[in-house]
Each structure stands twice: as structure tokens, then as C-alpha cells.
Length: 243
Image (cartoon, rainbow, N blue to C red; front, top):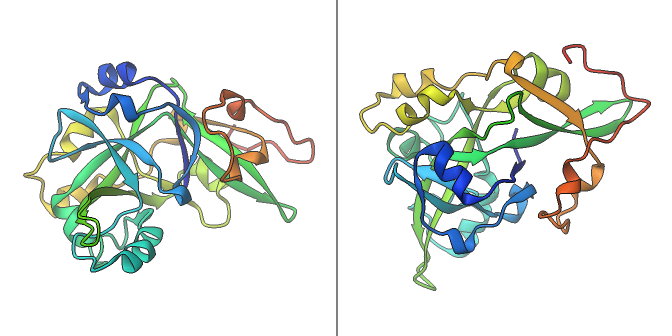
């Protein structure tokens, strides 16, 4: 799955990389480790405004959600959407057809289990470039406050060979879209068949990973401190076969 990610560059770099204008620059701050369980605001490009980078909350709330209590329950379940069921589940099936988005990142974290212990890895592209997760989004109006909230979910798929070694209990990974099809993902004329065909594991030979400190799992961690991305060696942990 994908519950921890990073986007550690400034908004101008994101504008250049994705060819879109950042519309909420005053509210954006680069983060080196962010937990989905805090429902953070993250930079996203939606098919509604493909020329803009907006900040949306992680944790999808469907437009038909009745109240705040239900919204809280649903957004906890809407952090990720499995590619195998995204077209069927009520909270996702309309979004995959009509509300797709790019979730911008430059890395993410997963845990490897070994000898009854968990070891966190930071995973990124070998070229260290920013990339986009395949996402879906929705818009919900809070009837109590009148606030309109935009939220998203990251789609996951089966793990490639690298992630299968790291995320070795569930063998899942987020869908990373190849750079040349990012804009296609936002195309409103895509058929459902075209859309689901894009939900594939990213090539393992284009990715790299290394172990980091276990403190990234702390929700109170200062996410703006770059040292969280420093490599930490664990002598008892065997090297990845595919590394």
C-alpha cells in the first residue's frame, strides 16, 4: 500500500516538471515524510484543471457522504484504492471514470518484515526526478460548515520485484505513471478499459531503495526536517537481492 510519501522540492520545481501553475503557493511547504493518517494537503493535478497544481487532502471522501461522522470513517478507508476493485467499490467507481488526478511526489516509504521486526525503506526513481502517482479525487460539501473539501486516493497495484522484496507481507505498491502518459491519465475521453490498462507496476530497474530511521512512523515527527531521508544501516538486515 502507500501511506507515507515525500515531496521535498519547492513549488517552482514542480511547476517546471509538470508544466502546470501552482495555485496555492502560500499554503505549500516541502515535506520529507508525510503520513496519510494525518490527512495532509498534498500537491495534485486533477483532470478538471490539468494546467493547475492544487492542494487536496489525502483520504477520499465521496461527494454523496451525508455527514462528518461518515466522512471521517470513509476518508480513513479512502487513503488507497486497489486497482483490482477500484471500478467496483461504491466510493471509487465513479471517480475512476470521471475524476482522475496526478498525486505529485519524489519518494515514498514501505516496511520490510524480517525476523519479526519492521525496517523502513525510502523508495524513489533512480534519476531522483519527481513523479506522479495515479490518483482519483472527489469533492464533498460539509453541510454543517458549508466548506467544500477536495480529497484524493492513491491507486495501488501488485508489487514489482523490488517492492515485493521490501513490502514482503502484502506485496503491493502505488501506481507510478510513466512520465509520457501522465497527461493521458487526465484525458476525459479515456474509456474505462484504457484507464485500467494504465494501472501497472512501475519497472523495478528504474527505481532504488535504502533503509531509513524508524522514526518516520511517528505522527508527531517534524516532516520538514531533511535528515529523515538520511540512510540508516541495520547490520542484522540482509541486503535486497535485487539491489
